[in-house]
Image (cartoon, rainbow, N blue to C red; front, side, top):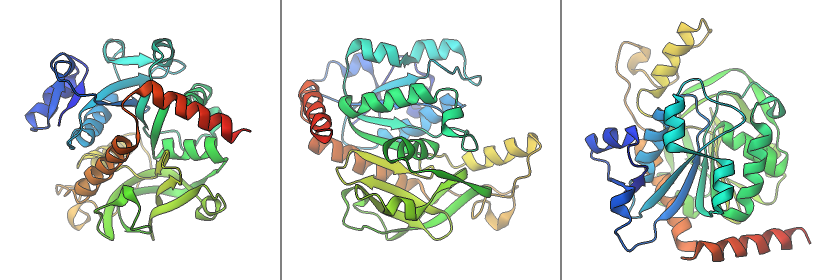
Length: 318
């Protein structure tokens, strides 16, 4: 089944060329099926690349997806045109005004790991969005810095700076093989990481509501889930394209940063050789499992879901 994208979104042409099953919204509305409503808070600087990366993953299931792109109002990205944001993104105020609810929310990473959470320009706005999501979104997928921010907001779990950038493609193992989110996973697989901070495993283990699903000997925690299947925290970047780490490496060098070659990425550690993608399959499987989990558990009527979530929040505070 296709993913429905905003009419005219540049990523649509790119995906059609790659034989990704995407459908313009006007055509999709003629089909008598309720798509899953997925909203993406895109905090990455090069938003168009992240759009394409996530749409590739979201589109590769038998479920139809209605995509909403969300922007911050308290910080305006310098790497994307205002016209693009105006045409394809909604502000949080617009979403609240429309009183929409969503099956799923994806919060991307952001290059702000070295800052304290409270020092990030849009932190207060992000906290407001996270609070809103508790009663308006069934399940949230947090990625990289988005995962660190979510764990801090939800459970006061702190992040810790790394001595150097964790950068490369690392081997991971599945710790909870029977969990629905890792259904079909190999016991060992690869995934990319690119970050300057980490979450302490012992801190996560003190929270009864959380369980560690996937970890790595070299990269640490990878996938953490809340036991109510409402929150998932991914510490890596499964959505990354094959050349994403290469582009980051070149960018960091051009900015005069001291950066090592990404681990297990360039053949023979030679940056002149084209890297091979060995994480794509599990990235697609992860997102497909998440969408299927949402599809199986959210009611057809999103207003009914909203009322259920409100009751849960009230009961949790009684």
